[in-house]
Image (spheres, rainbow, N blue to C red):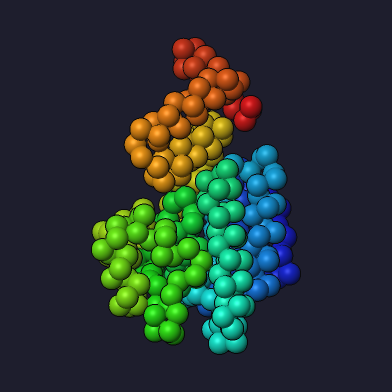
Length: 264
């Protein structure tokens, strides 16, 4: 195990093939201010550059919040010009997370609101505690989601439900988030870490290039017509066939043994 901190605001830990990134502002419900965004970018860049890391878990410190949103004190000072720049900065970070090339699992306990919900939506998989509360309450501040929420939410839950979540601005329960497709699983609080780790380890045991290509096929495919998406899938299927991992996986299956992945 190794552990470091990105100026104390973002913690980075590696255990085996799984990196855990923790937003560490529990006194502020892990709200996102500018230094915390910088810390998150540095942590995800570190995970991306470490070939030994195959899966990333993202969470927040303490029991009260995953990420409760953006720092309201910062938002209150925004001008039209700085607000647009603020949104673009957050969007760039979440685009980086979404296209990291490695699966990212959001482990959600407590509040995941505003920017925090947007961060969770940029992750590959979302696992929530029964005590989690999610939502996009920006309308109550005279704002709209700015880190990609208006775009990722309808892609996950559909246009109508996304409209309701953003226009009403109320928190929804973990069970409701599961029902509408905003989260993948809901588990008891005492099981959250174990279940998240179990999912991470299961993914980490698979062929890393195949995982990356599967994510790319899905991410690119949902943005285009079916016929184009099928071409993307066929191209990536062909790229899999050029890897050592594909040869190892098929050989190991035929030899009735566990594969040893190289990520090449």
